[in-house]
Length: 447
Image (cartoon, rainbow, N blue to C red; front, side, top):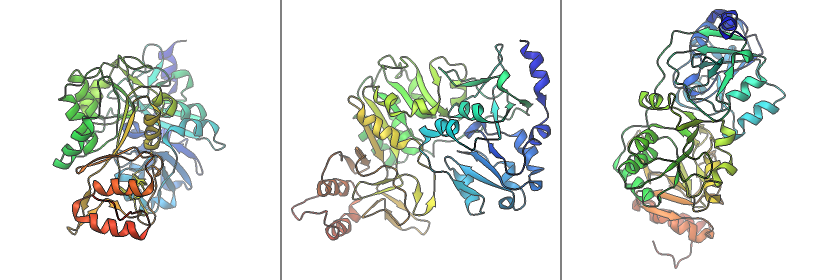
């Protein structure tokens, strides 16, 4: 097979590619940093001619051009597997909605769905000598989307890093219907949530002292996980491994500090395994053609069986808030959707099943509203409409700047006492009164 000849036959303009989308179509729009750009712009120019188009994607790192058309709700819906800031703003305009699912289930969902995508469109790295287009830092569920879509359109971008893997990290030209050569925009960057605060540093210190040599790490995104990563990079820890949903800048810092070898991993030995990556140019440069890093589908990275097979697995994730029963909300502010289920529950469960494994839910004890009011993240019960990401039966360690507590298996009164012990002191008395009303407080308890 002459791949170059086949390439030229399948090469089309962005406008031609956009022309295959019809009213009523379900369109997969890639994932995170590899959401389409050139085809998105072309599609925006004709989307007002269409109606009832269902787009699926997530973790948008820039506002797509299709979002900017006049009256988008009259022409399409954006259905997000995991929401970010651009998608949250679109919710208020009536065309963006969250699609609740455990992230690890996406590949099977695509393969089993009675309503597969009519079209799949996403950015890829340039074709290699063997005829493969690499998915870049977004292996995730894209192989499953390609297998089930009627039409597969790849948008080639020379700046997409070639992310090596074990499987399902790319697609062969024989499986592609259309090829678009875009304008090679730089990879979209995502920061780590700002510089670490004193609270972040305090929480990180409490977590890092629990991590042994040879541990395998999973970090979420945000100031606290990044603070943990920074502290690990400066620590005496050694022979660490990585098995994570999202590859973030903190892993690059840890690796470059010589702390990561992966040589104590029982699976994927010596490899840093991840489902997708998003960060700064430093991250994309590090992932590019790096055989130490392993891009893999999310139903492998987030599979509880994969996670639990790794000894001393350390899962570190954020929360929006939690209540005195130990229910963790990492997705919403009341009824306002913030992100999504993602893989947090998978890693919370998998880490506890791991020999020596621990899962940490970390958060600041308080936050300040726009009006300057200090509020507790630890509540008597979750606010009306809040989503339970991790049930009260699943939580292991809770960490705030006031300490860390192991909540696994505690009866409600002991769990309540432990949670209040790491709340902000200004709110503890009221939390005790609330706990008494709910009959989960013993008068003999002392904080």
